[in-house]
Amino acid sequence: APVCWIPEPAVGPWPPGPGYWAVFRHADVEHVLRTPETFSSHMGATQIRDPDAPEDLAFVRSMMLNQDPPGHTRLRRIVAAAFTPRAVRALEAAVTERARTLIATAADQGEVDFVEVAADLPVWTLAQIMGVPAEDRRLLYDWASRVIGFQDPDHAGLSTADRTPLTPLGRAALTHRPRSLTGPDGRPMNPRSRAALADMFAYAHALADVKRRAPGEDIMSRMLAGGLTRPEFENMFFLFAVAGNETLRNAIPGALLTLLDHPAEFRRLRENPSHLPTAIEEMLRYWPPVMNFRRTATRETVLRGVRIRAGDKVVVYHASANRDETVFPDPDRFDITRTPNDHVSFGFGPHYCLGAHLARTQMRALFTELLQLDVERTGTPVRLASNFQNGLKHLPVRLTRPR
Ligand code: HEM
Image 1 (cartoon, rainbow, N blue to C red):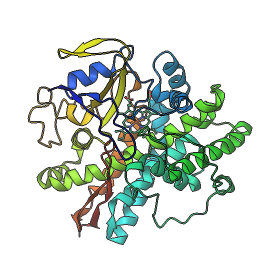
Image 2 (cartoon, rainbow, N blue to C red):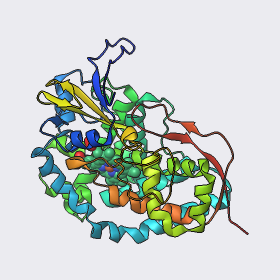
Image 3 (cartoon, rainbow, N blue to C red):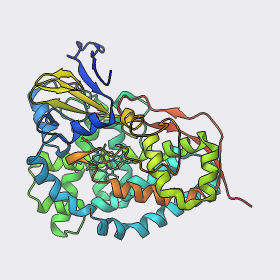
Image 4 (spheres, helix red, strand yellow):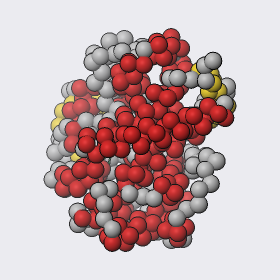
């Protein structure tokens, strides 16, 4: 059943949702994602449950991710300049240096939780490109974890040994002024997540005051120059804090676990590091950090012979499209030289991941360092409880420098 109706169960005190169409085939996933006039993001691209209150829906819709062209195009243009190949290249040397330090420190420690090791690079890089002081990156990480990891109470903030003091701006933002909102699952947001959003927005506004006095090339400065409304500004900050952080934080340990599960391919890659670019694409195909996104039908349409009515929810499964045997020969085989590799882990169409190039740059930097070490599993990996993110909470490994 390539397009299949899934009933939504009642959860806790909440009644069942109306249900949704699940779309599994690669061609259909791409079709849905490139046809926003029929499959719209306006009811939210990440949450399957609809927001309860009209003000929550208005808040959801002010985020670029949840808009369709032409509104989406306007917002995307404002921030896209921070992601040109030239802009990413300018960051590459610093990202490489940071990756080298992180892996060298981990190798000195020997036994580490690789999830913690990997966590720092995405949020450090995100801070650079956003124009957030590096000392405050722990805050970004913690806020994103609390809002997005809502299905797993143990989804922790950055607990590395990093005790760098926050900037005065960071300290001042921790004031907890929660406002009532529905969470990414459409249910009232838990107090932990609400407080995280309140702190995040207080921080974003305080940082904006600094940036107005001294603008740069970073995303924050571009947002301020771009004339965003207050909710658009807050939601753009929120989007980057999550999108640039929660994804890679799962992609990198997931990629290492995939290599550890396929020792022959891991060995082949270590012996032929020039395969790294195709290996990274295969890691992303095999372990898509985000498993699905949602759209809502704006009109009646037919997909694979199934009649979809206006207003129906449509959920595309990237995790399934990436294993479509009509596109990927022997799809369950992990092959570091697989070419072509048209995986959809970065999405497709107008919302195609803005940070894809930056994400690849970070993975390349980190795995270039890692391939020079012996990596051995020392415990059982622990998965994140989530229907949305393909995440790991713990990946205990021993890293040793070969003699
Ligand atoms: C959008 C995946 C890393 C920023 C998306 C979408 C996917 C995705 C699937 C499309 C959402 C949709 O169709 O509604 C990933 C994966 C990553 C990653 C798998 C890492 C391996 C990043 C990074 C950044 C970023 C590092 C920024 C620093 C964004 C933004 C959007 C987006 C801003 C929204 C684009 C729009 O609405 O036009 N990402 N992402 N992502 N991503 Fe990523």
